[in-house]
Length: 173
Ligand code: OFO
Image 1 (cartoon, protein in one colour):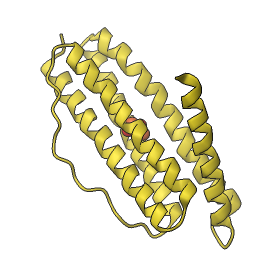
Image 2 (tube, protein in one colour; image 1 turned 30 degrees about the horizontal axis):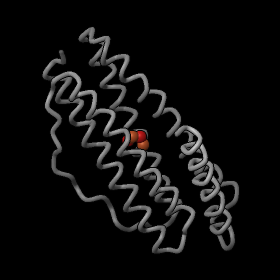
Image 3 (tube, rainbow, N blue to C red; image 1 turned 120 degrees about the horizontal axis):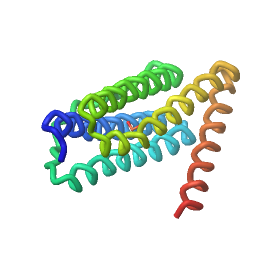
Image 4 (cartoon, rainbow, N blue to C red; image 1 turned 30 degrees about the vertical axis):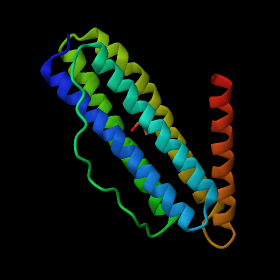
């Protein structure tokens, strides 16, 4: 049995995950528009992963007899000054999500809600991986540089990441 506060906070998280998916799909569309096909594929894939994060929360709420509520959604930004700026925004967004997950962990801990505490561990590990992933892309961008052909090589690197992710997912199924 979840507390009302936990139900509200898990519902907020559901909506944040949907926003993350919208954001990455919009960014994917921007990349496709700029002919950055590798980044477009990678972000489209990531948008799907965010919906999977949302569904995990949805299932948990349903299993505990709570009502999941799909709220309204603000529109994500549609334009970016550069690929670097876009990935910086993603990294900042993931740090915000990590903060929200940490708040949820704190709440579950304060309420001695051990089932929710355990459920949230998957998100704690996932956020660690996501921050690492986007930080590594930003590091590569610094290393390769975004001038001239740099952007082409970055797009190719990110395309390889998307291909590896597809292989991992196929192997898991
Ligand atoms: Fe990008 O991890 Fe969920 O939001």
